[in-house]
Length: 295
Ligand SMILES: Cc1cc2nc3c(=O)[nH]c(=O)nc-3n(C[C@H](O)[C@H](O)[C@H](O)COP(=O)(O)OP(=O)(O)OC[C@H]3O[C@@H](n4cnc5c(N)ncnc54)[C@H](O)[C@@H]3O)c2cc1C
Image 1 (cartoon, rainbow, N blue to C red):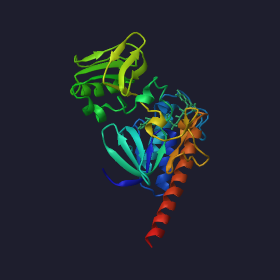
Image 2 (cartoon, helix red, strand yellow):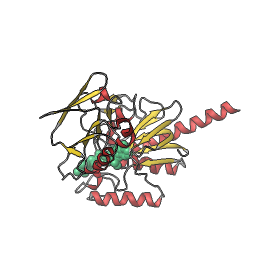
Image 3 (tube, rainbow, N blue to C red):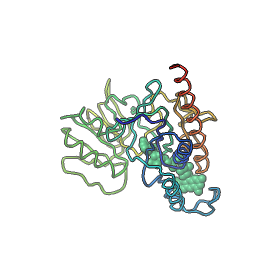
Image 4 (cartoon, rainbow, N blue to C red):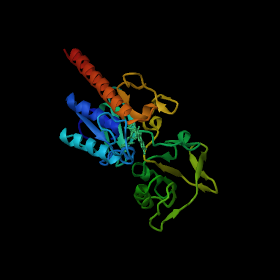
């Protein structure tokens, strides 16, 4: 574990990047998690006509401008995927897919809305046989049977890793691309519907069959906010925020699509700016209070 940052920003779409630029200007230490290709939702847009100052820019063109802005301000992106954010009292602990742990006084959630609907039983059994991170939890399934639902070919590496530990691995691809895995892993082409069990998850129910397993790994691009940050209050499937982009957890802010419609670049960037400024006020206030206490 490294230093404790003033802020951890999760997401490199317009919301997270705008928050990062603002924190940099305000001289705060922060770590920015996301992707070096920034955001699929920016990259894939054909033509954008409502981003102020850049009429008829393509998605790739906008991403390039964002990237140049980061480089000019010497802002780096950490590509580690965040799997859990935990409130520890006066700071946050962040766990990642590569099993690293990070600490920050504040968190800015800017993960967009790619999470889709959860399966029946998923939330009930989360932490009791259901997990979102194979690398983190694989040791718990030594010589056991697991099912892995992968939402992108990238997750095949996780299944390969799991097959070195578990006795049996079933892989259910939730995408159209060709699957390429070692022959220890059984590929099941079916559609998951529900997770069942008593105290722990014991069964993955699919449209055309069932799998009796000890663990079920659901590997999505993004995790629903309330699952990423336990205790966070949601409102109509989005993170509930006030005008300062404060969530229900002290020191935790949210911005962009994750806070609700309209899903727009400029709204996301604007909210990223507000979230960062609110985080700055929170950090400065905390420092003042600590100084006062130590007098
Ligand atoms: C094809 C298309 C065209 C569009 N056209 C327009 C348009 O013309 N005008 C307009 O205003 N809007 C448009 N939109 C909507 C716009 O793309 C979104 O509103 C905007 O991208 C939301 O920004 P965001 O920063 O909230 O999230 P996103 O851009 O979705 O970025 C989220 C980021 O979070 C990262 N992330 C998620 N989870 C994690 C995690 N656990 N750890 C680390 N990183 C994580 C993702 O990798 C991604 O980088 C379009 C969308 C699409 C799909």
